Image (cartoon, rainbow, N blue to C red; front, side):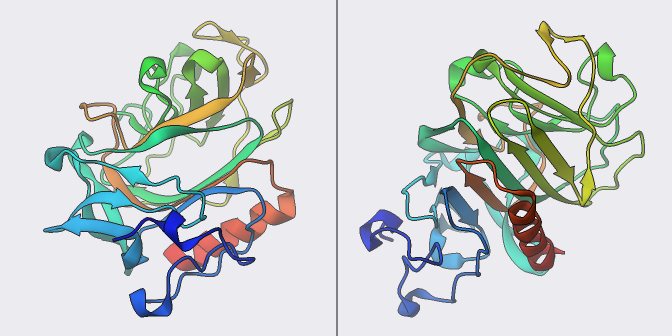
Length: 273
């Protein structure tokens, strides 16, 4: 199938790259300003697949930031999240990647997904987003597991774009999340001093640990920029890659206002709940 870039830039609604003859209508994304990439697995024309395994997941923003996986054994499979199609990254091996990492300074990132196992402070971590290959020693976004002694006993959800010295540590609580728990997540960072982190409609407090693995600050450290994302779901290796299902990923290269975050969050909740 042709790349989205061949359909031209995004329309004023943030999509419209596909013709009506190609299948169902795209969902109505409420905020399209500064949209960097958008992947919605329930929109079938955006998936290139064979025998249920996906080799390409097209970017619906019109920016051409498509996700790829040419190795059959590493390709995610088409599954469901709720009642809609989604991509399964089970067995902690499957992954997809941008041909060139997407970079940003201020940003807002949203995900709709589940984990295929119970999540607790002692469970195996699920790393969902990774930076470029040379910067992946600690992952990018993690759900579950115990990051370090500073967060012992917490379900840690944290972002770390490694060599860029950027970390935001958020945490939920010590309650175990059941397998299949729906995570609607957002991270909003203004590239200066303000971060907002929300998981399943609960705002997370940022940690105040004075030192975490060599990184200091009141919950975040942003010594260098820009940040980047290269891989989704893992790096083609085993733990702590993702054992879960992703329905939608939305990345903006700006810090959205609180009202805009609420709008996109509501959009994802209504679609995937």
